[in-house]
Image (cartoon, rainbow, N blue to C red; front, side, top):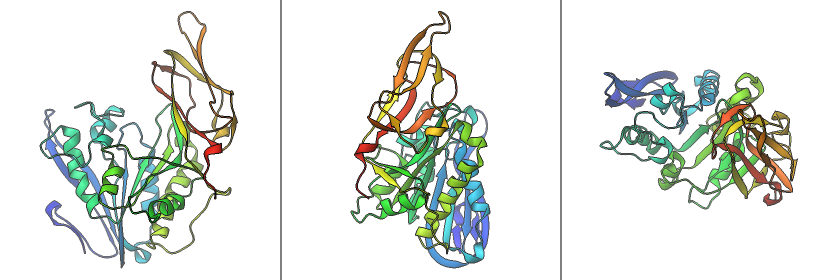
Length: 329
């Protein structure tokens, strides 16, 4: 029996259940809560936590989680899946990265505080779910004007490679090894000795391209197969996976209207150094006032703007990795 008795939820083996994690009463006159879905397999096994929409505009994770959970045969499931498809309801409602109620980034607040800012209270409500898990899968994503497509490999502190193994199992071609951000949900998992997979996938035109939704939902199932929660072979990418160790965040240099000069055709591919990736036009003078070029001789775009959009100086433009930084296979 998977029990959340303090929430009034008990899920028998081979059954599904759903409830809400209470957070706080807010000034708008309603009680803020976070959705929780539980799938309890017919057979004993590990517990996987899947979380999405830690940032409010990154809604791609919702469909990825929904599609993956709908495909699971509970009679064949070993263990339990606990899923939080929307970790940050206030930010989702406002379609913003940070909460409009306290202006904080939820993914810098873990493990949170029951007596802190509202985002810290949300983190405090979610953190106990991480504690009872054997693995955390955080599906991050892009926004309306941006797409993102790689797996961020972060150390779990064990030195035994479990996090890298599970990150590779998610199934994207490009991976990047880097450090944790303090206060993120994955850094909290690592501090508890729990391996965490950070899948960066989704956004913009990927919402309407079912290939990417399939990759994301398959990634969830792949991690479950790697944990021996599901039978079957892990679905690998057609090309050999590449683990990169150097990247840079490129920001918009000047405000105006951004126009991309490359599209989704470069995802998972190689872009020559110096290639113009996008330009910025002054909408009043109608002149080009800025441009962004690929910084490495062999550049790989992990995140990219794919739609014309009004931009401010310092906005995210691209995350670009150096293919020459790849670790040997």
